[in-house]
Length: 73
Image (tube, rainbow, N blue to C red; front, side, top):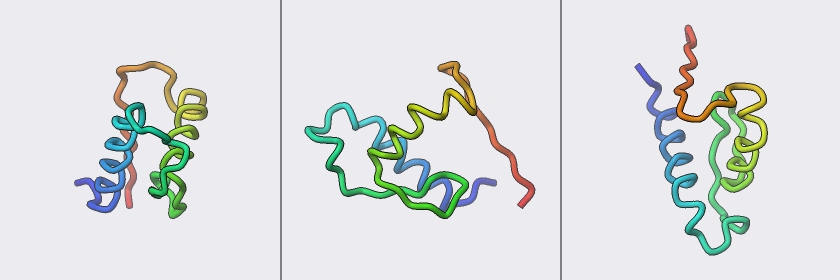
């Protein structure tokens, strides 16, 4: 079972990432999201850039691969 708050936050991130390219000025977006698996909130565009830079280095550098993170709690 997926935690509802985690799911809602993740869906908001996916919606922003999907629409980012069509935004006039994505650098000035005032929307904030929680960094997944942390209590830290961050600007939506900054989170996008953070994932774009670090995700391939630490998690998975192959596109079209699904990453599943399992936790006991």
